[in-house]
Image (cartoon, rainbow, N blue to C red; front, side, top):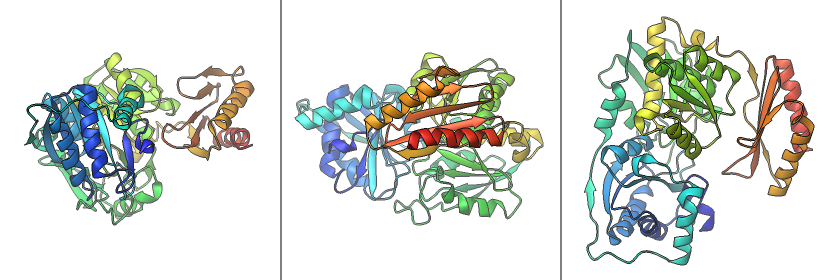
Length: 445
């Protein structure tokens, strides 16, 4: 069971690693740790989510906590409900983009503050392992139902500033993105839906826009013509990937820059975070748009904390997570889509033309190398630090980053997989390829 407790959530294969007994124990451990009395709990459309909900709720109720049953919803809606319903905590039962055999739990304190490995998941693991649950309550809690989809969508819809009607394609991957898409109801946005029927077996393709092969159907539909752009949601709809009107994939950090422009239109001078893997052009675009750019480390728990500490309006991550102060400093894929729609409709230009000036540099994309051990990772970082650290501007916000006048790189260990991740960017394609190969030779040597 220990393997299910991850850096950012609890996740594993249903039926073996995660069972109804696991969910019951987690419900009791969650209340034991937080002392919470009102928990908003949502779930995705996987067949296993319903029985896991029932047992999690039974465990929480046994210790006196009321469970607000959000039913089927997206993860962003669960974050909204946490704050809107004035809950002490929230849980989303989902395995996000993982294949159908997985399921899991995303945990938050009040106001959608995430619980990570370092801020509570490890404690929950210990409570479960030791059986150190709080005593049963004299008066058990109850389950009450609430549907926050309408209120969430109305709030996000209020950010619309559309100068002309748009046509877009949404690939829902049979996941929870259809809940986010209700935001567009009543707006001059015509939506062509792909794979809109919720189906936790994900019969058409994996619900993971980070894998470019999953975008093939979206690209093909957009290339039929007449669309302004396309968007693909992941399984629980807290991430989104975009293609332009030509069906070409847009890097997710470039989307961060565009969304920042829209958010800064009505919030001049505001702070915007971008993760340290992002292109130099993201920082430059934020500055050009009158904002204050700040770099964050990778991982939603870190980004959300930094946003709160610096009163940031928005943050974007290379993985397609887009965080908004307007949704409790948490993700809203619908608002990300709406920001892109605002910019396209107001500009009078196609999306490909809007991103062209932002794509100023040449990026490698994230390149993963499997690790033999933590010791190997440490030796790789030490070798890179010794070779490059004193030649450029080095910092260790997350792994090792070194900047030079014409190129930069970041190498860091994955928080969730036995991988070391490399990102390189340069002012020319030739230099990027040269430095990429040079760095990989050290990493894989």
